[in-house]
Amino acid sequence: MIANARKVIVTCAVTGSIHTPSMSPHLPVTPGQIAKESIAAAQAGASIVHLHARHPESGLPAQDPTLFREFLPSIRSACDVVVNLTTGGSTSMTVEERLQPALQLKPELASLNMGSMNFGLYPMLGRFKEFRHDWERPYLENSAGTVFKNTFRDIQYILESCADHGTRFEIECYDIGHLYTAAHFQDRGLLKGPLLIQSVFGLLGGIGAHSEDVSHMKRTADRLFGDDYVWSVLGAGRAQMPVATMALSMGGNVRVGLEDSLWDGPGQLARSNADHVRRIRGILEGLSLSIATPEEARSMLALKGADLVAF
Image (tube, rainbow, N blue to C red):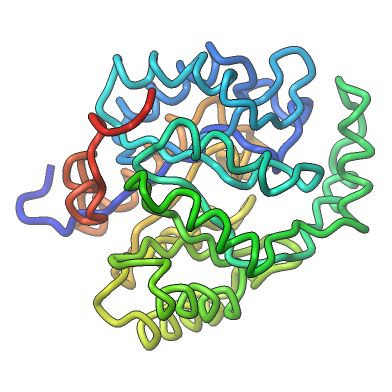
């Protein structure tokens, strides 16, 4: 540990709906795998774990709170990591379905996308030819013609539904306009600082992963939110570590994990989420920084505490 180093919140996105199970044998799918990967990521130093659930047999994205309840108590009993639940789910779900885990389980944090967007995953078909489940190829093919829907009304519904639970939000911003949407809801009093602004780079349909894109996001967020926000970034795929390193040098925080990238180097699959955490930990410590503990992250983000969740 480096004395008096700046504290960096490291979020690990353990599993999600972006990648299909066949793309990596290391992607956790079952409740036991998700719990094990989350605990290992926390032990490697992650301040926060961001979690989706999947149907154990098919690997399909799932927002049934019953599935979340199969792994959340194990994580909570094993470590003090901050738990962040998705409200994203998948494009086939209604906003009411997507909200259920956050609504019923009342986590300290929940993710919230700041807008509808094209979510182009179909280029993956050029790299992956064999699939374990029947749904996976059509899921990627159909991403050329589907929209992830999150209208102003949807966002308002999620914010108002969770308003009395003390749940705060990881505000996911895939483009500059999403920052202005977050500012809009802050002006209306539905979002309160300090905001956790998660800038997302490198997904087809959103902003790119060029250094100018990263700087533009940071400049715009600084202008809109001043000192009333915490900036974090995630880079998709091969952009994960380069974008994270850029952000660290600019005073930012980072998100890594198998939801965002299956890779641990050119042509080499990451064997675990903990691999990603250890890699980014080495980078940030090389920059004379240190990972925030879960308690330090709670303080930086003004979270309600793990004793006030419903799992």
